[in-house]
Length: 273
Image (cartoon, rainbow, N blue to C red):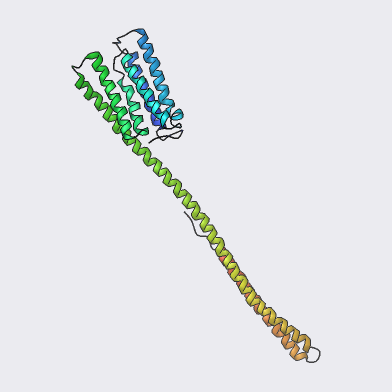
């Protein structure tokens, strides 16, 4: 899971995750009753949130096609933005849900060690914000709650990644099957053409050998009749009759050959699926 094409299989999954999380997180700010901080913190939160969302939504187009350096830079920037956002936010740590799309995205695009490092860092930031603002008294309980959210996100991402990988393999196998089927059709056409050519050659040999023989004998009989006609009309007539009989046999052979050719041509070709 390194460099991606311009539209990777998880493209729409990423867009949906970022969109839903951004709406959920910033709706909590809009309706929150305990915003602690100054006005600049609110504006900074919305500004950083917008930048974070823009990076997440456009990452597939601008980061995925530029290789590992751009990918590493993307996660460094996103981790820095999320860290600043969580500490600056006037709702003090209650925007931890924003880290989940990046944690999920890292499982798609990074190797397991790097993705684990990103996830552990983001989890530590979420817990650290709570510890920084509210102390360590309830830190263990908060950590367990956050851990459940991270575990669910990781499990869901793994299932989604496996489903997308299975879909990609299925599409690749379908493409291979289509290509193999096309080759089979081409081979069947070549086989049919070769069989037709062989049959035509066989019929040509039969016509040459059979009709050629008849024509040779007919010529000999007619030549003999022409030579015998002035002095011996009887034998000359016999030669003519023999030549006529041979011509009839030759015509029969030609008709049989043509009939066989038509029968072969009327046979349906082998079906290819």
